[in-house]
View 1 (tube, one colour):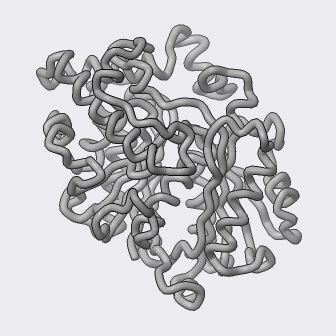
View 2 (tube, rainbow, N blue to C red; view 1 turned 90 degrees about the horizontal axis):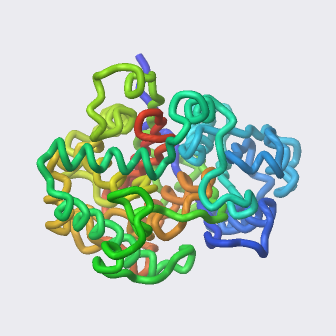
Length: 398
């Protein structure tokens, strides 16, 4: 019977570029920047990497659809390099490939790297997907947008749980304020300015009830992870971070094509989270998870994710937000690096960037953002839109 990869793989080095409008660098430059930090952190040479995975979504315009650009940028000596894409969950998908290779015994040391140069696409938001998602938008929901879809989730959530618009918007504002406060302390973040609840509530509306500060921005960036066996990891550093679980769930179409979904949560997140907790041996996420990095593309996404992860009861996440549970000083800090709100969302890089922060937090190397003694950290990387999504969950510990 399958037992998963719990404690079969350890992260021994990670790197992350500064995210932002990186007009100074092309994708290859960002790849090198993230990789150099990762190998220095791991204390190994590039020649010790035996296989690599490249995660990128739109960068194929410049890099093509193969793994060759990663091999070229890093001068990897003829090793296998695989390019993957899975909507906004692309970064964690690359990480999953590297981890599975080590867990299977196919290689001892593997690299996962995600990169994206969204600013170069010329779009104010995400470019259109020439995939099933693009077909969905063009022919079934031609006026559908990501902000519009998540705004519908917010209004449905408010209605379903008897939350007034003012109460709901105030809670969403608190989520954004929390993330910007953390991002202001992070030199790698794109946006590093604290904001107030009043600024959030008075900001221009993008899709009601979501305003400007409820939505993540567009940026460039890259992040890298080097994984190996626990035995090799212990020989390289005293504090390797073990992979406790990696799970992914993709939509079966039920959200769009059936009446089983109420529009207030993401079934893919709930399913991936349940399987990840089972794999990691986590019985009570609320009591055992010490730090969170979730896919806060919109403030409402973060709110419903608390419930899909099993941390807040259905309909009660707003109470936990107002009680400060997810603040930097709270019991379960969420987005201690600033999240997508402050980093933006270069698709291929975001999932590994989240792991980078959890890695630093578990090793107590997060500087002024350090949370209090976390034992387990969880990352949540979501792709698509509420009615058409893919979600990956990672749980990590020392």
